[in-house]
Length: 407
Length: 131
Ligand SMILES: Cc1cc2nc3c(=O)[nH]c(=O)nc-3n(C[C@H](O)[C@H](O)[C@H](O)COP(=O)(O)OP(=O)(O)OC[C@H]3O[C@@H](n4cnc5c(N)ncnc54)[C@H](O)[C@@H]3O)c2cc1C
Ligand code: FES
Image (cartoon, rainbow over all chains, first blue to last red; front, side, top):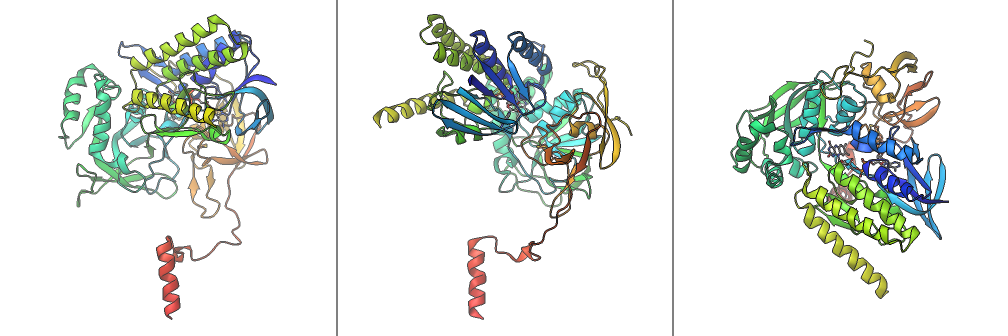
């Protein structure tokens, strides 16, 4: 029986494991991807100070520390069920079952679909798929492509593809349909981008580099949008063009594009065919929470945090005894925040096992402070209102505890 | 067309480190990839995008999410079916088969005629009743 099983070897899971090992706990980390690092692996952004945030290097630091501490990490194993048993949890995987006293679920996020007719053709992929192919596997996803969906993540990854020499025609919106909804609404997309622009000049704009900053911010703030799009490193971003259809027989050959009004309605007579051999769809991120649900954890819907979130507090505890969560499963934020949350979770878990160690009490508090600091300084933010979302969640957790005592 | 879709030079990540070459077959044809490649990345590096066809419609499918979430990349590996190509590392001598169409003994021929909403169903019932 392990002291703790950690599902997910992303920045949250790995940094939690490191803390647990520092306190000499018996830890097992499980991840279904063949490499440790989670979504951190593919990341490559330039920080405001000019330094590169290189996910492969950041991952290396985490895995090297973990291996120095003899952390047991099993890769290529999928967890498909979690069962609450009397003295802990039974974790069901495709390589057998594992038991532990405590469980940390750090499964991260997944991409929401923003389907466009033709999206099942080979050559159409999510924007994250292209990120992993480009930066992790170092494979070019195609000769010329287009990005459908304009948000912080797709802008960052489009830049990463450019860096790798992959040719992109432009970034455009998906055509409005019952699923794409807000992602297809130019005003709403612009609004969302500019609401994170208070992070002057905002993650999205920051990608544009120093020159474009002020100019773009102003244009975003107004509702005026240039017909030929704005350019980011020479690549047009079209908030007023939408793809209605992806065409091809055995693979992507082209997309059908229309001009759209400020509320996303197609303008007649503006139809155009753009030849591309790959398409990346970006529908945003949502927390990957199924395992917490089957473990019996209560949930709370939070738009600010990116979806249905397992109820938890700042110490990364859920209302279920011994069940902890950390990283993007608790809300969509950058990898630095996930890593800082993982540290809190690891220390919280150690504190629960070792009980009454003053040093640990202090360390948990310190790590919580560090999460707040990291959040405030984040150069990349996915949703406006993260702070509010976090505060509300704290209340929800307190309420859940109250009901429990009342019962 | 061998491995010509590799990103060899990169301004930030540097040039591609030396890696062992690994040989495997996909639908009987031999390909090579690099150590650490997944089935999906090795095939894409060789220009292969179609990993399976839809079991019923026969339409081609490739990767979508590339990180194990969507199950669009199911292939058969050394006789085990339903393996995600994007999560599975290639090994020397691996025998991979694409996902094939399946017999549809109970498939309805006129799916288009099915009611899509309860209102449509009621309408159809009513038409029948009126006759
Ligand atoms: C496609 C994608 C691209 C992203 N790109 C960026 C970016 O460029 N910049 C940025 O700041 N943020 C990005 N993010 C946000 C990202 O979620 C965070 O930056 C950070 O990686 C979250 O860390 P984490 O440890 O919570 O989860 P992750 O890093 O996602 O790690 C979770 C791990 O859990 C594993 N896992 C999940 N379910 C199971 C299971 N059932 N069984 C076994 N293992 C499982 C996964 O394989 C994964 O390795 C991206 C997210 C996604 C989904
Ligand atoms: S491409 Fe989505 S699971 Fe493999």
